[in-house]
Length: 165
Image (cartoon, rainbow, N blue to C red; front, side, top):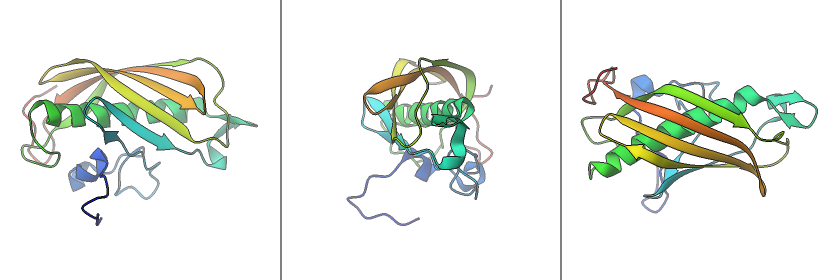
């Protein structure tokens, strides 16, 4: 994947090839949703437009898809925040990899189809091994989903990271 110097890169662009296979965010998964998380130093931001086949019933986005978006985006945010806390650029060794230890999703109201969704995730608590994150998913001006994710740092298959589950 090539990028210009001015083009921002999503944290998922830095995932090691052997773990970039996630159905939600893996660039090496042909069926990926293509979740892309951009870290601004305070929160992770993601935009996603559901396709017609992401429906639960006419006019409403499938809740399982929304949970997947909250999960993948929040894990990406945790990884970006951990790199930032260590004062290192994403992609530097040792690689930081996290998995979901807990996922809580609250559906506040139906999420409409045909609208770009915006997810914003902030860090509630951060340590070298764990992050607790809060995610807000909005469809236009309406918050439709809130999530809370506990991310735990693990040793990647590529040998990066320094914690074990």
